[in-house]
Amino acid sequence: MNSPSKSAKGKGKTMSQDYDDLRPIITYRHILSQNLGVRDPLRVIALCDSDAFYAACERVRLALDPTVPIVVQQWESLIAVSYPARKYGISRMDKIKDAKKKCPNLVAVHVATYKEGEKEPGYWDNVDTRTHKVSLDLYRRESSKIINVFKQTLPNGEIEKASIDEAFIDLTRPVREKLLERYPHLATVPEDAPDGADSPLPPPPLINWDQLGVLIPLTPQDEVSAQDELSNVESGYSTTWHDVALSIGAELMAQVREEVSKQLGYTTSAGIARNKFLAKLCASYKKPNSQVIDRQSILRNDAIPYYLRPMPFQKIRFLGGKLGDALAKEYDVLIVGDLLTISLDEMQHKFGENALWVYELLRGIDRNEVKEKSTLFKSMLASKNLPKPITDPADGQHWIRVLAAELALRLKDAREEVPTLWPKTIVLHARKGYETSRSKQAAFPFTKNVTVDVIALAGNKLWKELMKDVTSINITSVQLAFTGIEAAETGQQMIHGFFKTRDAQHPPLKRPRSNSDDPLDKGVESETPNPPERQELSLTSFVCERCHSRIALGDVRAEWNEEQRASALAMLRQEHEDFHFAQDLAGASHPIKPRSSKPVSTRSREPEPKGITKFFSKK
Ligand code: CTP
Ligand code: CA
Ligand code: CA
Image (cartoon, rainbow, N blue to C red; front, side, top):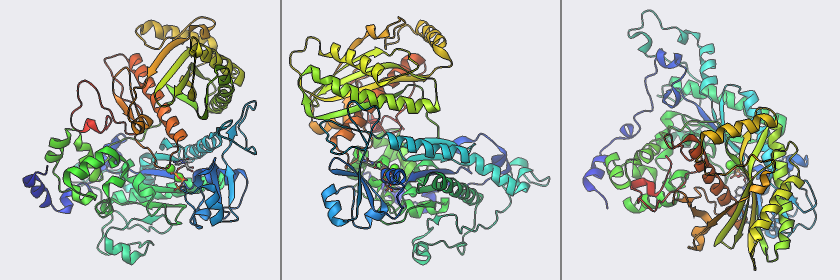
């Protein structure tokens, strides 16, 4: 229900009040502080996303010209379409047959697959979902290479991988260094400064935005007159020091992206703004329908209102889904501008205290940090949905070997970066339809050389235990995972010592771990019944046995096929279990927040969540 008085009050507000933090006063103290974190008024964040990523990986692997129309297919569907192929009207929605009709010269590459008996995934003839399993290893590897170029080129920028082809980069520190280098007079507070270090900085220089990227216009008029191209100095616009910071950030990003292109052959699109939310949003400025790729967009603070206001808010990643639906229904509105008329009181009244977060997002405020995710408690999961269900327990071995090959390769890749990585646990899940999931887990032996054989042996042991006393089976999905992957300092000796202390310190730890020489003997059964529910729901969420929360995929893509959705869900489940495990380790006094970067919706059985927690568990 609408609250007329509050909305009316909101409507009376001017736009500058809605966005009243766009031109903060920046002082010497600000520029000389090192640790202002998310409150830094000179914060510069970039999001860099690779263009048509999987297609680009295959193009680079095959050393093809960037103008060649190429697509990547998975069985009969397309999972990536290069920009030259998009010119023919081909999209991810097309089936391969139709794509070839649209473009007879199309280069179609089937994504690499694992098949039994092969240690490495490959590009085989006659791939078949009944016998093969998709491998995304090449793309993961290329993704790490790109991240490494970011790290080398920007040694003091914080980098957070956001997805297989995206990363956030906090440019605040390198920008600050360049700023002080270029404008050394900012480094000393002038003697006659009225308020000492708290005096505002002198006026900033004019900026030449040429070559720096696409400036998102300040007004709709600018958009028309600039015709997509940069107007260097807008009349009547006064530059801020934050604009100068953004322009330096844009220089740095242009260099980073050039390195990625030179060293690895990938083009990228980037967004540069004052926080993560805005950087991500403007990275896809005018993408994906146009052919504009290989470029960066810059969102100045003063351009935020005109950029955000007309945006349909349900298109915004965090405001899609249930929360967006609820907002749209509650206020009967479509665009961000409409929601600006709702006062904070009103929103908090309807959606709880945490609605502050939505209120701020609509105003271009986002206090999330860019943080490199630690590899602690990371898991690796190989999963296969079976078009032809396993009905004979003996047939499980085939898939376990295939999944083991994937885990072996992924661990090997990961160890290239952190050589001492060791998975503490191996877990096997088998699912019958979407109803029940049975799983077995066991401590994973410490072996320096984690081969397919070692993993398959452990996996088969779990499979046998899982199939014990089972008369009839009908398995439609199998998953093999490593969990609790950690970097050990040196050698086995250390690792054993490390875990002994840990277990002694935290006796109530739920996840059992063995110190015996053959840890595989200590397989522990854990059955995770997944109550029958609406099919659609069971595909995208699950109820955690421990906290009774419903955990849902935050970002379900319409184009995902069942296999992709199931793997995403399995990964989420594993992450959630790891979260409990981490919480156990940390002890009850310091609960850790779930690590998932996706918004996870949580619905506890008891107590009923209040306000906005119905839609989110995480700010
Ligand atoms: N991907 C996928 N299935 C999806 C969505 C994405 O397999 N449902 C893969 C794509 O193959 C893609 C990569 O994840 O190459 C990154 O996705 P995204 O950035 O959304 O698309 P791109 O193909 O990179 O295209 P764009 O240039 O628009 O970013
Ligand atoms: Ca992309
Ligand atoms: Ca992406």
